Length: 376
Image (tube, rainbow, N blue to C red):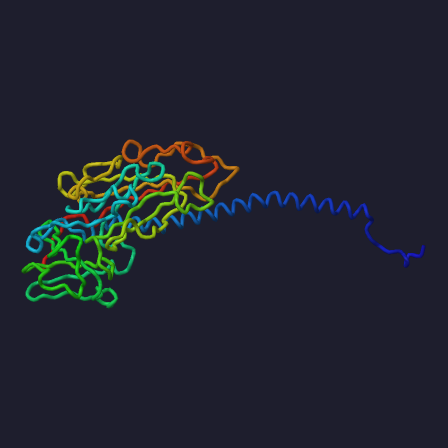
């Protein structure tokens, strides 16, 4: 055969061998790629969980730090000689766990109330009472009220920081170590800012005006936010038996019941435990440890003695991992022998061993519970 007529190429056997080699390489590469893809997805979910935790728990931290902000400690007997009315926090017929943390409508509200074991899986339930926990910009508004030498209020710059004329407000007068609520009618009543007059100012004193964050008549002279775990709107990636950590603000509308639309703070939460340290002897320093095994503190003066709040939250980190085994079904949600409890994942969480679990710890000093006075 003429060499010029020969055609160079591969035989069928050679082609099959090459295909086989490439197939082996592709299979090997895919087997190593799948775990990398799964790990990358898991790390992405873990990062998302951590970001969610930082953002959501910062809301909780802020509100606990402001517990008691704008809250009154007594009634001004000069402006309200007969304190005979009622305010309604959650109202009868609303969530029984939240309603259990109500205060007597003819008494002074507690700045911070912890319901032991009232949430999902026996977790704690916490109510924070303060003017600025309403989750709206208006509830941040406040000003001074001077009654001497002439009646006047302070204004701020920018003007958006000022109380609007239609906002409902309360007037609180500091007197030595107390804060008295100025009203001529019921404690649940309030006035529009444009209606505040010298009748609300005691002679030769400085008072505070706090906006309740609403342009409609409110039913309480404070706002309230509850933090709790519930099994509502739980994402599909969460382990069965976990819930969502919510912040829910009590509806201020007169005649309403229950909470406004709850805000999701953290998903896939198994447990929350709350403890606190308080100043039992009044020297300004925390000296007593308390764990919220029941609803407490029992009264407003005890709540004002709280100097430190510790919140422990056990939550799922990332998503389910078939090839992963969590090392222990018993997790301490708190501090051994001091706060919290041992939580048994096996008793409440399905396939708990195939999830990673993270304990968030918040240590918060309430800034608004200390005694204070104001000099004009």
